[in-house]
Length: 56
Image 1 (cartoon, rainbow, N blue to C red):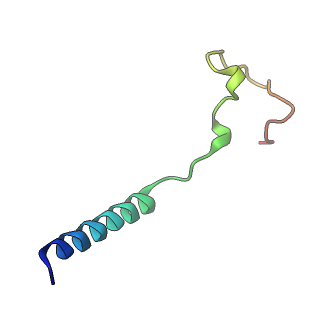
Image 2 (image 1 turned 90 degrees about the horizontal axis):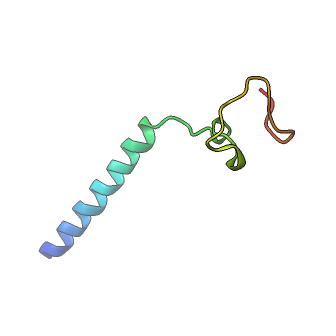
């Protein structure tokens, strides 16, 4: 086998291993935990929301 092929295989295997470790340790992303774009920079108001906001 060529030396460059060995390095390429080692690179891709290490990249996939890193991605698998990252994926296994990551928490699920909750997209509803963020304020809507029109509310960025505004203080949070308890009990207020938008009619399209998900139910809790």
